[in-house]
Length: 213
Image (cartoon, rainbow, N blue to C red; front, side, top):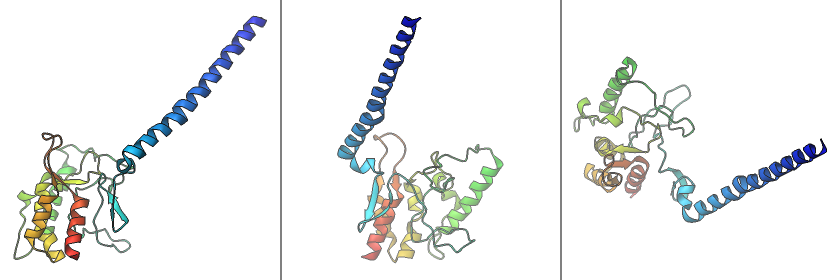
C-alpha cells in the first residue's frame, strides 16, 4: 500500500514538473522568441502594415476601409466622391467580423442587391455631360464583397471607371488620375495568380497628395 502511494506521488510530482516546464517553454519562452524575431525582422508586417501620412496613421495596407462623407445622426453614410471606393463589405471592414454574406449566386436577395448596386455604382461614377458609366461596364468586385469582407484591393477595371469622378472632385485632370491608377496597379500574385489589382488606400493617398500640390 505504501509503495503504491509513493509511486503515485512520484508520478504526480513528475507530471507537475513537466507541466511547469512545458508552460514556461511553450507559453512564455516560445511566444517571446517569435515576437522578438517578428519585431526585429518583420517589424512593419508584425504591426499590421500600418501606413502613415505626415506622421499620422491613416490605415493598414492589409485591411480595407470605408471612404464616406460625414453622416448626421440617423442618416446612412454616403460615399465621398473625392475618393476611390473599395469593394462592398458585409462586415463594414471590421477585422473581427470577417466573412462573406454566404448568399448563393441564385439567391433572389443577392441578385437584387447586385442589380441595385450596379445602378448605384454606374450613377455615382457618371460625370453628367462628360462621362457616363453603363451598368454593363461595372465590374463584379464593385458590387460583390470578398470572402474575407476586408479586402483592401479593387480590380484595375473598377479603379478605371472611378477616374473621371475622382478627378472632377479633386480639381485634377483625368489623365493625372489615370496615371496614378497605373502607377499603383500591382501585378498578379507570383506572376500568375489572380488579376492585376490596386490598393485603394495607397491610391487615395496618392490622389490627395497630388490634389494638395
